[in-house]
Amino acid sequence: MLDLTYEAPTPKVIAGATSDWELVIGLEVHAQVATKAKLFSGASTLFGAEPNSNVAFVDAGMPGMLPVINEGCVAQAVKTGLGLNAQINLVSAFDRKNYFYPDLPQGYQISQLYHPIVGEGEVLVEMGNGQARNVRIERIHLEQDAGKSIHDMDPHMSFVDLNRTGVALMEIVSRPDIRGPEEAAAYVLKLRQILRYLGTCDGNMQNGNLRADVNVSVCRPGDYEKYQATQDFSHLGTRCEIKNMNSMRFIQMAIDYEARRQIALIEDGKEVVQETRLYDPDKNETRSMRSKEEAHDYRYFPDPDLLPLEIEQAWVDDIKASLPELPDQKKARFISDFGLSDYDASVLTAEVVNAAYFEKVAEGRDGKLAANWVINELFGRLKKEDHSIEDSPVSAAQLGELIGLIKAGDISGKIAKDVFEICYTSGRNPAEIVETEGMKQVTDTGAIEAAVDEIIAANPAQVEKAQANPKLVGWFVGQVMKATGGKANPAAVNEIIAAKLGL
Ligand SMILES: Nc1ncnc2c1ncn2[C@@H]1O[C@H](COP(=O)(O)OP(=O)(O)OP(=O)(O)O)[C@@H](O)[C@H]1O
Ligand SMILES: [Mg+2]
Ligand SMILES: [Mg+2]
Figure 1: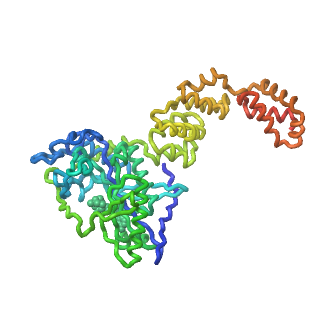
Figure 2 (figure 1 turned 30 degrees about the vertical axis):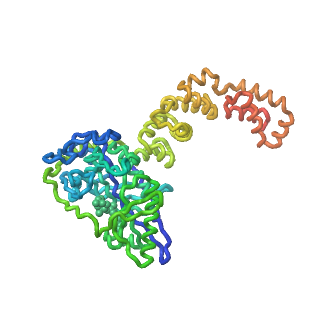
Figure 3 (figure 1 turned 90 degrees about the horizontal axis):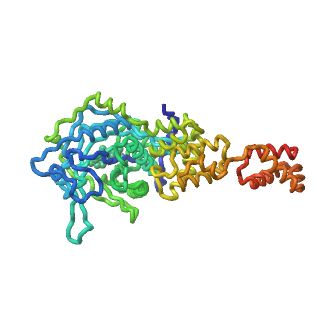
């Protein structure tokens, strides 16, 4: 279905003092599962609730409370795996990742280290100009989110909000296949798009529902190819992990800063220490949070309160059968069915609601014309007023009707813009607007001929000029259009003028 005639983009290269350097990036994306209840409790996941109001006893780590797996979360993880073309593991298991933190009342996070629910998959990341990178997914596991410590409410005290504690996350771990800051952002964007299509995560980065730990290392040209050939990580440089990034722009800035910091260290004869770092957007720098030496020993072990998670192939097949059309397929279909350019198809499929709107407009009509109107006129107009497609004052049926009028020659493209504006501000239907406002294009050759005759008679000097130089015929066309209030059919006007002037 999908035409994968993409070239691999060249990796980003940074020139150092001793040689060129290439970037190697792997992302751990944490995506909050779109469900009503938490991973192991019935407490609500609603964002913005009163602090500590969505907390079950098990979330608060009360003694004797037992976790009960939420089937909905498992289904969402499976759906995500299928959407990323990944292996679904019919048997997976939960482990305890132990650490002490004030917003983690259990004293451990339930995660899946040894047996994740989803194995290897892939994401096609398009970089424009016919270039794309296939980023491999290593695994997706389910885990609990932690709570939130609040330090800026009181000068002396810190507060803890457990509403987020126990909410289901999918950790989507990529292979180190990303080769530059732009690719990293494009990868997150593509992943977000797929998750939103699937309905398994709302992708809201501002609320932290989608955030990434960004692993960065640098290597000399040629080393990555050695890694590729052998999958031996020793060919790569030491990675640093920048935690909790939830902005595309900051992800790119942090990677660039971090790569340059590592290059400077190595060229200075020092070593990159594997560590966790934080990005400070105010200073545009990354700072050490903890190094590997002081890293946590998580003392992972299988959670004794939870049985291994076993799912049926038939259940997986049902979920597979319910998958929606995904972005790559939809884009390919828009290109082949509606004759759209790669760019227009990308714009229209960025969000599933936009794609659905476009399809309603284009159904049975000129696809390219429809794409033009949706992208240039409608999106442009909506953007001006910060509207989304869901609250567009012009319905898909109305825009379709307008395009039908243009195609039938009832109105010119220019008049159509006026009709669109009236429709946008009043909600009236295009056909009715054209009729009532007398905007119909004049195709009646008699009326056009009369206008042409009048102009020719009144402008003998122009007639002579145009006969000597047919390029000047445009002046007559302009005059006729003016005389008919822009409603004359341009093709008919051109033809009649040429005939009358004997050109
Ligand atoms: N040399 C490297 N350069 C850049 N990225 C790397 C390199 N080696 C590994 N990575 C990436 O680092 C990430 C490691 O994530 P993973 O979840 O496996 O382990 P972790 O970071 O040690 O654990 P945790 O989940 O506790 O943070 C992966 O995305 C992987 O592709
Ligand atoms: Mg990880
Ligand atoms: Mg990590």
